[in-house]
Image (tube, rainbow, N blue to C red):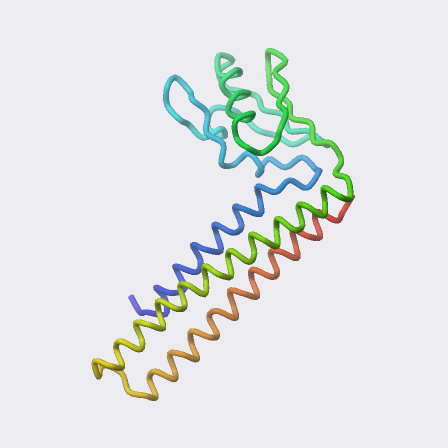
Length: 182
């Protein structure tokens, strides 16, 4: 595998992690993706929520219908303990999560949170670039690369980091627009 592809794969991992972090920021509208990382203790085994129940968004609420009614309490508990500040309601047949409208202050907090996650993603991509650049310099010292090759690789790394920074900005802007919509 070429060093560029390896670097790009590492940056894609950072970008995927960043997108997952953005999906965890609620927007005031019901979103099933908000529950993606939740695992339920189902008969003693931690199981992803979407494998023990069907999840649907209707209006401003998410409705969770377990495949096994015995899992209702475990699903409710997992959602409460998820750290997402959600208040699930168990009615004996399904679990409902109502999403209240966001205040302007809360929207601002979530936008700031999205920008903080974006900065963390940029730092992580720069770390990947730094490691790749150190490898390039090491190869040049050992005589495996010419000076021209080093400049070409530096240019490729810079283009790669610009591309990923643009993607991070685009995802952040998209989330910010979602948060600004009433």
